[in-house]
Length: 178
Image (cartoon, rainbow, N blue to C red):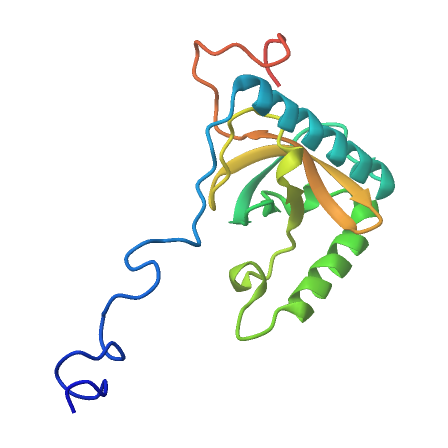
C-alpha cells in the first residue's frame, strides 16, 4: 500500500503535496507601474475611443443644466444613476428611459435583479463620461450630471460630485458656482 497513493506514505495523490506552482498565484499578473507619459497616452486613446463611440451612437444632450442624482450601482466600466427628482428627466427622454430600464430588468437572470431590484428608473453612465478628475463612484454617492439620449437609451454625462466643494478648492472652469 505504501507506494500506491492510497496509503499513508509516498503517494502524491492526496492532500497538499507538491504540484505545479504550489502556493503561487500564477494566474494573477500585476500591472507594471506606468510612466506619466504612458498614462497620458492611454488617457488620450481612451478619450478618442469614447468620442468615436459617442458619435456612432448619435448622442444628443437633452438638458441645459446639471441634474442631481445618486449612484445606485457601480461596475468596472459603467454605473447606474437615479435622478433625485424623476421629473428632472426631460419629457422627451422618459419613454426611451422606461423602455431601456424595462429591457435591462427583463434580461436580469439567474436570480439576480437589475440594480439591486429598485423600481425607480435609472440612467446609464459610462465611466468615460465622468468630467471630474479623480471622482471615484460608489453606491450612494451624490452626483450632478447632464442627461443625453442616443440610439441605445438614456444616460448621464459630464458627471461631477454632488457633494459641495471645500471652500479652498476653486471651480474647475474658473467660474464662481454652478
